[in-house]
Amino acid sequence: MGAVRPWHIAVLVVLLVLLFGAKRLPDAARSLGRSLRIIKAETKGLVDDGKSDDDLAEKADAQAGRQPLPPVQASPPPVVDPVQRSRDVI
Image 1 (cartoon, rainbow, N blue to C red):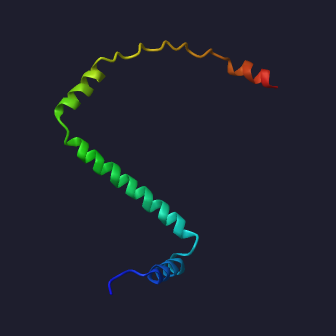
Image 2: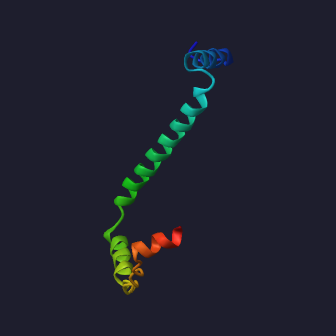
Image 3: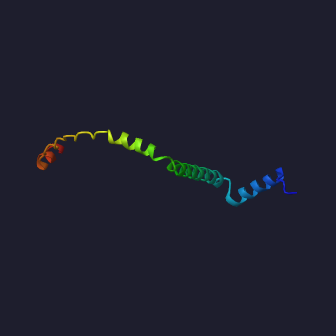
């Protein structure tokens, strides 16, 4: 008596199409999929936070070994006389 039959699914699909329209259903399914992916990534991040501090120490050591790049010496832009520039354009 509590089993879902194929005609139940067909009626549900017809009701969804009538309620939301055929154009909005793919967008709704896409956004639902994105939301589920975000939830999955966040819960995986929570599980990863429970790992030992040894992993964090290894990552911190790897980051500490990096040296910053030397600053780039930028040459100043050439000074152009506005009057001369306007003469060149004309």
